[in-house]
Image 1 (cartoon, one colour):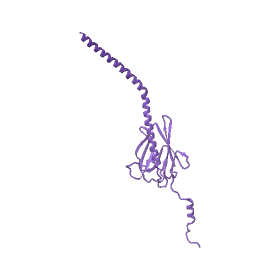
Image 2 (spheres, rainbow, N blue to C red):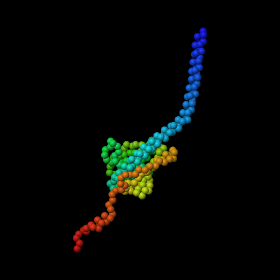
Image 3 (cartoon, rainbow, N blue to C red):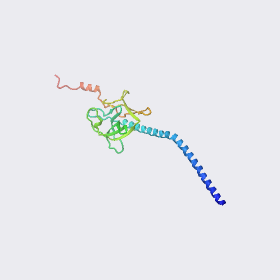
Image 4 (cartoon, one colour):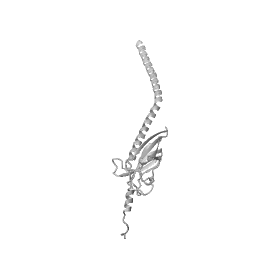
Length: 227
């Protein structure tokens, strides 16, 4: 009889311990849920911000490398193939990538609208000699679109020549710009990140010296012997 009571007492004590353990577990889980609910949103925002910063850094590196490598390549009218607008730029550079064939390609970096909204996209096309006049992007078979930036980021380009003055357009100027600036704006936070690329090649085509031309004109022989 005594053994039976002791066995029941031990069972009851074990059950009491289990109840206490469950209660403590509930308190711990509640405290963890409360703490997690407080810092998890901030943690998620920090991760998103870090990812966006990395995306912007990669886009800036790509823009700088591309525009710094722009080449002075003329069209059939001897004007360089470089067309710059506020939200798009088109130029010629050497083929990029280890698997690409040696040569030139036309690169267009522009903001377009797709099913996910505005996006900054880089596209390329094999170089072909274009007709005289302002080159139109829809006449060039661009391929390999690569998204560089999406909302909340928007971009605007600016161009500067030898005088150092910035403008939002660079069309049919007869030379390449000295520098191209790109301003990346975060529309959610209202912040702007600015960077610039300096074009490394000669900005203008070689032009004959006017004095040499004048001298050659003066020494040119007449149509027949003088009397």
